[in-house]
Length: 147
Ligand SMILES: [Zn+2]
Image (cartoon, rainbow, N blue to C red; front, side, top):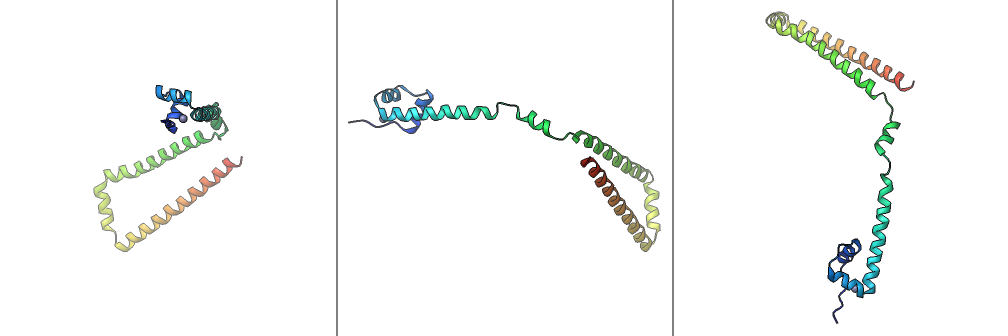
């Protein structure tokens, strides 16, 4: 008596409608495999029903409409900041490049101790200017955020 039941893969193929002739013949004569195929068909149809409604609406537009808008304003501000930094660097580096011979002579002529002092004072000024700038930026951000 040769009555091997179908494998799970064969039954799934039958449920999806892609089974070969032997599988169809067996299902037609076997109640157990037919019941399994019916179960798979039910599961597949339920899954089709589940997957659709999750992406029925436009998720991107829904989320974007709820996001705050000041993004573009800060982008423009940042562009101005970069332009300002570039301008400052250019106004320093171009003269240094043009007068580079005099520039290096100027530094070699200074005593090492006074050179150290000049660097120290310059660093202090840069650090305090940076802190001040950061504080001002934070204050402006706070004003923007709690308006
Ligand atoms: Zn069977």
